[in-house]
Length: 204
Image (cartoon, rainbow, N blue to C red; front, side, top):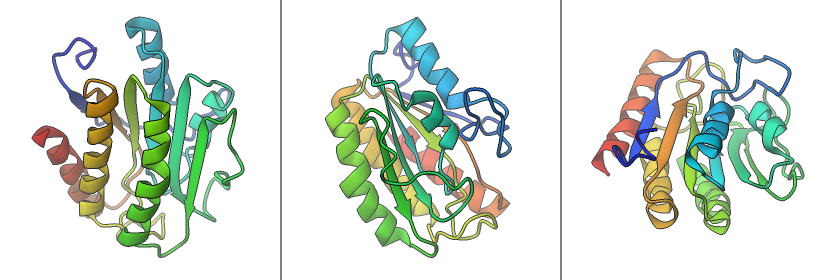
């Protein structure tokens, strides 16, 4: 509400449990309900958002978010994630109605590979969609310390990716960007990554 009412440009929601694995009719993967899907529908129904971009950089594919929106052209979903890895979805040929953009990464992929993929695949998808609102499934289990993934990202990568999405938000949706916490299971990696993300949001 605060973002649409111009009380804030952006927001970070430190929510538990995470939500991006929860499908239309099924809870799974630590996720009971799909928090970001609820946020998207709330923005559409209460604030008139017509085009919402959801970007998910959790190490695991957001199968639930994809399941909910894959037939809905008003919501775009772009995901970087490790493959193969739970939940086993997120192939590039899973495109919905042209609104799904999956960018699988391999185990041990590092900052440079992630940034290249984000720059060449995710950002153009957001730009082509011209959203009214950007939502971020901000999982930090792609950090190299995390025990549930095998990517080699560092906290600065989340600062960088946040900044790039903020540039998109400034260009297309009056700075409106809201991120929701997803995975992250190493306390040091999680705290460093959250701090990098939130500090970048606060710097504007």
